[in-house]
Length: 327
Image (cartoon, rainbow, N blue to C red):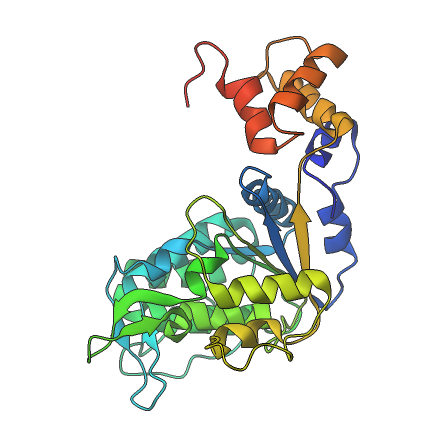
């Protein structure tokens, strides 16, 4: 994986390194976690990865952080501990996003396994496309979770396209959510069915059958401090295992379980060097968003002012600070 200025090289026909990783992935599941200080381009890296996945015909599923903030309905799905919960309205909206964003791919795929009738979903046309299947769940929240389960099963069937699963601001799904159970106790995010499904792939306990990538990013802008997550990330970056943790500290074992299996790679983003900053500024200039001349003097000034090539600050100085620019 390269730094973000690789985007500027796309104008010259060079290959973004995510594309190389995606091309060579085969049937494996790559698990990546992007970390870094505020403004280093973590969210932009996720957007670039999703763009490359769309261009290569992958199916892309992006999970926003909002699913844990308690702004949608939820209901228990199991009666035996630990209780898990569905978010039917949220799942319906997610199905709509998946179906519409991946319409060109999903419209070419049909249901491969006959549906077994249930009280809530008595029948599904045998020749329905996966795009229409997703929209079917999007139109009726009462069947959204069941449709989502069927769609995931179909995407894991043989000879389906690879998957890219993305989540930004990982800390929000590594702690208690804002939802409460029948005893008014906070529900851990991993008890939400959508989060449980996502972290099972991030942890490696459930690989993607047809290959793909699970890509997550932390945030320094609107992220809670989760001690167990921070400790796990420090250990992974240092190449240490999680076995030697302090037994006297109350770690969240559910969070630690996500990081215990080998194969989860952490990439830390930092500032761009001057050549990378120049490439990115030239890309902005060719795109028409930067109208000023890009020369060595201008690049040097902006690189210093941006704190050594911090992407967010570089953008602020070059684009957002321009007179008349509307954010």
